[in-house]
Amino acid sequence: MEKMVKTFPQHKCNWLKGRFAFYKYQEFWNIQEFLEGGILAQQSFKARPSDVFLCSAPKTGTTWLKALAFAILTRHQYDESTSPLLKTMPNECIPLLEKDLEQVEDNHKNSCFPLVGTHLPYSSLPESILTSNCKIVYIYRNIKDVIVSHYHFLREAAKLPMEDAPFEEAFDEFCEGKSWCGPYWDHILGYWKARLERPEIILFLKYEDMRKDPTSNVKRLAEFIGYPFTIEEEKAGVIESIIKMCSFENLSNLEVNKYGKHRAKESNIAIENRHFFRKAKDGDWENYFTNEMIENVDKLIDQKLSATDLVLK
Ligand code: A3P
Image 1 (cartoon, rainbow, N blue to C red):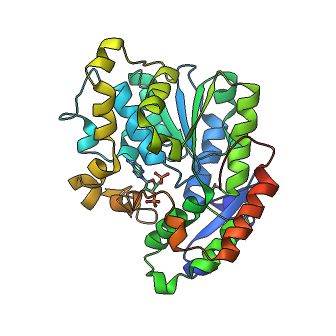
Image 2: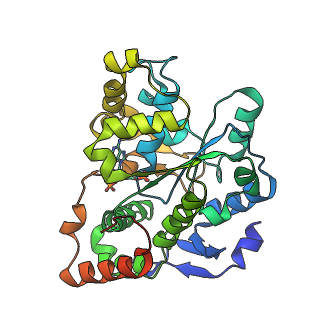
């Protein structure tokens, strides 16, 4: 697999001093480890109809979505003082299809835990997910904030200070479509088109909407994944407790997320948990973008996504 991936078109990120490379497969760029796992999943993964996939491009709110879905699903086993989310970072509570295939398959054998994460584009999902009519939740986010979040995450992963990682270059590469699981707009478009055809099995959630109105979005999420809140639960404030437990303020201040490491055993992709909890500020892009950048991104969105009803500027 490693040899095969090395034959794919390669892009070395110049702004990261070549410390990161993406490989192009089925029209999307990915890092080697995740691409190998994605291809393996395409070849062998057998979805269960009850599986629920939490899909996203990186840096669009995956960690938050995973925390919320996990808390919703496990709320009868744990409360906000006993939840595994207090000791384990959300990305480790829910396996990623392209990295944790064994764990997903173990869950199939040993439990009825239905949640699986993936950054794979819709067109690269293993066939069995589509033929089994598995439910899909897709989270997306304002492209400008994704560009900034993506910049910092990869920069931290490459252990480069901002002075050595020019934002302008990172911006240009992202807008050329060369980002992790990019082109970002094509990632969104793939799921968006699929939702048009199969609205009953694909739920779209927007990061910014979830920030503005977490209660109704958490309710939608719970209903969609088949774990709706009862009226009694609503009255007892269960939704608000889940939102509070999964809030950026709470999760980012937990010991595990401040000092722990994600994928600690795999030295080439290990990364400190705190890098998944940077700022969570809507509109942080204003601190980075020049007027020309704003114009270029807006044009790009008009060109690529004008056929959708999505607001991404
Ligand atoms: P910023 O880099 O803008 O701060 P992903 O989980 O897909 O990698 O996305 C990471 C982004 O989500 C980061 O954005 C991070 O701060 C933000 N984030 C992480 N946990 C969050 C939470 N509980 N609520 C809101 N945003 C969160």
